[in-house]
Structure formats: C-alpha cells, structure tokens
Image (cartoon, rainbow, N blue to C red; front, side, top):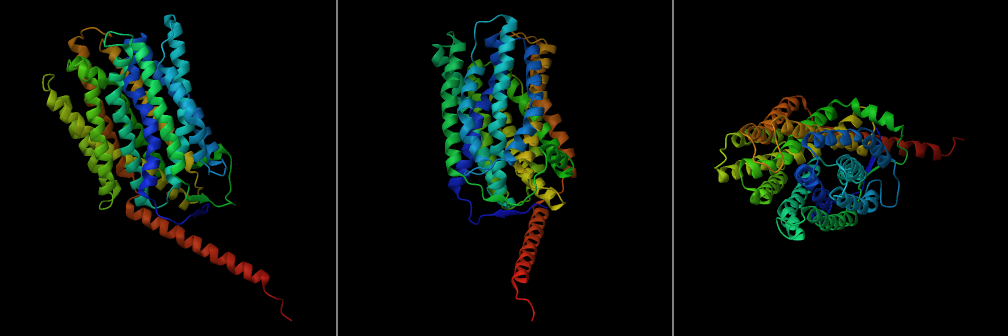
Length: 474
C-alpha cells in the first residue's frame, strides 16, 4: 500500500464552501448543457433531434481517451500548489470561453452547423475533463476521514445545485432579455447569457483555488507506474467497479430527465412560460437534499442512506408518470421530491469513490486518486452520452417535431422519458448496491488498520536509524 501523509487540522466551513464553489462553477455551465443544449440545438440552431442524439454519444465517447490520460497526468503533477489545485487556476478561462462558443450560432449550411456543433461541444467537454477531474480528486485529498468526506461532498453538491438553480432560474429570462423579447433574436440571447454565466463560473473556480488546500499527500517515495498500469489496477478494484456502475445508471437518469424536462413543460404541460420555474424548483429541492445529507450522515451509515434515498427516487418518478397534464401543482411536487431524493444519492456516490480508493490501497494497490475520479468521470460522461443519445433518438422515434403541436404519441414518449426511464435506472442501482461492502464501519476499520501499519513502519524505520548510528562493540 502506498503511504500517505495527512497534515493535521480540521476542515472549516469556509473551506467546505470554497470547495463547493468549484462545483457551482462547473454547474453554471454544465446545467445549461444538460438542461438547455438539446432544445437549443433542435429549436434554435436547427439541428434534427436524431442528429443531436448521435452528437451527444459521439463526443462523449471521445472522452474514453482523454479522461484516463487526464487522471494520470493530474496524479503526476507536482507544483507549489499541489497536484490538483493548479488545474483549476489555468483551465477556468478556457472553460468559460468555450461555453460561449458552444452556444454561438454562426450562419452555416446544415452540414456546417453540425460540424460546428461537434467541434465546439467536443472542445468544451475536453476542457471540462481538464478542470473537473483534478477538482473531483481534490475532494479526496482535502481529508481522509470518511464522515468528513461525506460532509465535503454534501457541501459540494449543495453548492452545485445553487449553481444549477442560478442557471435554471436565470437562463431563459436572460436569453429573452438579451434577445429583446420572446420573439427577438434568441440565438444572440443565448450567446450573451452564456457570456455572463461563464464569467461567474470563472470567478467561482478562482475562489475554490484560493480557499482549499491538499492535506492528504502521497509519500515522497511512493512508486508511480505507467498510466495504463494505474488504470488496470483500478479496474481490478471490485468496489470501485460497483460505484462506477451506479454512476453510469444515475447519469443516464440525469441526462434523460434533464434534457427532456423543457419538452415536458413546454409541450406536455403546455406551459412554455414555466420552463425555468419548473427546473429551478427541482434544483432548489436538490439543494435541500444535499444539505440534509450532511446532517443524516452523522447518524446513519451512508450506504443505508443511499438505499433509502434511491427508493424515494423510484417512488416519486412513478408518481410523476401518472400526473395528468392539467395537474400543474402535482407535477411540481413530484418533480421536486424526485430531485430531493436524487440529490441525497449523488453526494453519497461521490464520497464512495475515495473510499473505494482506500479499499484498493489496503489490498495492495496505490492511492491514485485522480485516476479513480477520471475513470469515474469517464463513466459519468458515458452515462450522459447514452442518456443524451437515447433522448434524441427516442424523441425522433416518437415523432417529435420542433416548434409544432405534438401528437399524442410524441407526448406519451416525452412522459416516458421524463418519468419511467429514471425509474428503470434507479431500480438498476438498487440491485447493484446490494454488492457494495464499504459501510461506514468497514471504512473506519480500514483506516485504523492503515494507521497501525503506518505507526509500525515509522517505528521500524526509527529502530533502523538508531541501529545504524549505534557505536561498534569494542
């Protein structure tokens, strides 16, 4: 097991909030992508739903190469700021600039538009990889205490959902404001809105950089093998593979529901004016779920809490499926409760990644935190890719036509995507989590054993030094 050194000192609320601002920054852009990019491409830029679905899949499959490379690179970074923090500093501005370009609509032919969308979206996702993998790994080296890790992640995702709520509350009003009204230049409105939101995101990344520090550090003599060896070692970690499976289905859920929610409100509920309010209500419920997670993990094993919250995800999405189009209040309530439960699940899942790394290190592996998070992010992107592709393809299959009155079949398909697809994903995760073994008690035992081993190694080295320095017998 590779040794690690932890600098003493408790985590402050200031540092937890500062770390969380990094995901506020990510979500200011990311939530625009998953909530509005599909409908932007189909209803504003003029790309077909089927073509957008293929775009979503193709671009994110490219991450199969970039994500592990970024994880290995981040693990091997050495700087006066640590391994992971400097990436936040240097990638923030490119991330914001590419977000604006991805929502820019040059006057091109149909094929030209598709090529432009591929290039700008791929570039944005690549820079997202460059900044988000080190950011995620940073959460694993702020502390090695399992309970504090869950607390850090709950702050992170509460702040992430604050960013998401800002996006969903302000995006369409800002788009219409900059466009000069609902019937104005909506394409220009999107471009200006992303310019403003991206500026806020860059500032949040800078604050995250300056308010955090890396406490858990790899020992100076820790062996580093090749990036490929790091990846193969990770793939031999069964507990990490379980969390990877959970991440895949959870992000399929997020991708499908997020992409289709504007269609659900605009066409099924018939209230295009409430798209921002509806999504924002879900985001605010998610903030409450993330904050409650920080409290509940003090009294309950996080594995058990995950399982209970996942049941809630199933129940409330089923309720959403049966809500009639004229029951607006009930639709709001079911959507908010589903988001509330889901955002208990998400931070718990992320807090389990460093636990799986510690488990692997305990069983003879290395603590390659960024590689674990890069591969985890790759699985997340694969889930987003599959979910995004399925959304576009199924909308086309059900007969969706942009900016037209939808057929009964198309409306039924929209409801299936927004409600039943999440149920199937949550059921899959309930099955997968039955094989997860790293309960809070088990993690405490792993860390006790690691501390005892470290003490023994220290004592042995001290005895060896004393022996080397002892005078020879006369």
